[in-house]
Image (cartoon, rainbow, N blue to C red; front, side):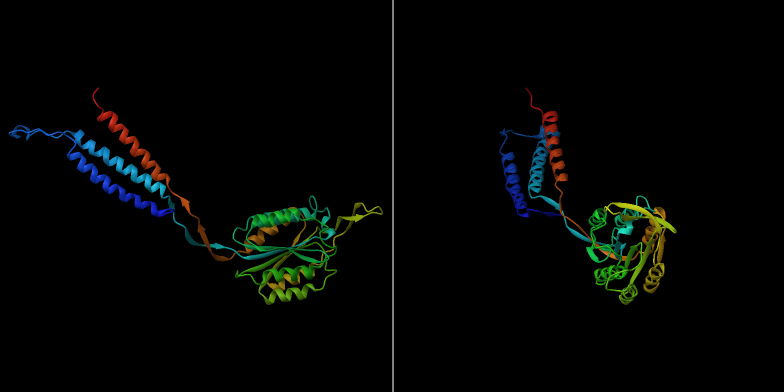
Length: 328
């Protein structure tokens, strides 16, 4: 225990002269009577009320002491504690190309990916996570952070059109590597989600995977799209979006190569349920033991002393008005 105002405890020394005064005053409080002998009183017992009178003073002293302690503000001491938990460094790289609006998922690929990604982030309590978005270019949406709510909210606010259209898988992966390579966790991984093939950008996907391998970063790649045809968004002459059934084309060979080269794994998501299962499997795979330091803040702890002071006051009132009640 510690005190916010320990200097106030010096007031406890005032109880010493108070006790001395009580002892001195008690000896001179009652009148004396001279007797030739006290033999007749030798066998008489002292009344218990005499002890209760002293008890009242003792209760009053303890009550004052409790009030002084309360004024000094007793507190629970700050302390650090270390616990062993699971955690890793993870960067999510999400494709924001227009084709992610295809409706072979409910309501579309993009909204389905956002939902499972946000749920994945919410369940990773001890991880240091970042967010990269890419389309025709790549961009660090959020640097590495442990604020899960911030990441989940940012994912929910993503929208198609934030970046120039296209699919720069290599650039998206390279940006994610730059965000995670300096992380302190032993396990580092990137989850790259896309629904197409690399068709623009400055960095080839295979080159980016070699860089990830050099830094010991595992890459989990997810190809989003059902087999066969899917309703893709296409602008009409007036610029309005219509949906046309087109073949689903995903460069699975490249995504498989990226995953294999870095020690990760490739997944194909053909509907909402499979996509959710994929993130659950990655969640199970990416577990690493780390030491976490927890800090407990200071809190006032005056309540026990307040209860004691109230109990002492109540006990004094009961004794005074029940057992030591003065005669009328």
